[in-house]
Image 1 (tube, rainbow, N blue to C red):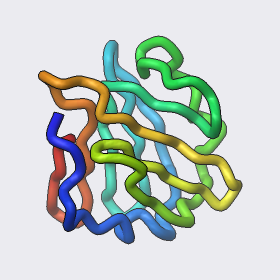
Image 2: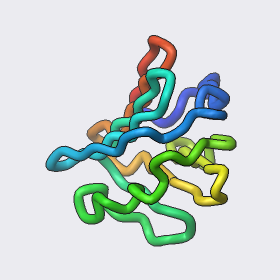
Image 3: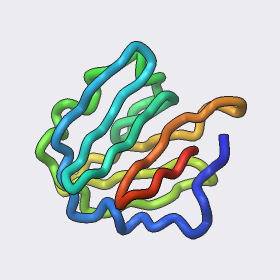
Image 4: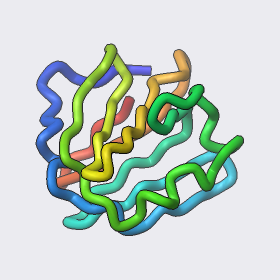
Length: 113
């Protein structure tokens, strides 16, 4: 919807471990340590898989619970990649033109994409 801001600090994810993955009917929530959460309502891809709506494949990231993020980056205007120490990558896409696709809450700030 909005894309990622040019000044977004991807460093907030480095060293944070994925602690909890939770679900609602059309959403997936990635809860990291130190009070960081990503709420995903759009499309994700794991490694080189085809992108899927989170509601179509909700258990796709459970195997990463306990893994630590080694780096994060933007691949395109709204696509964010989280690289884990296990070498797995989660791609989170800005997949809706009219609605929010995901939001990031960390360090007292929320970014809506």
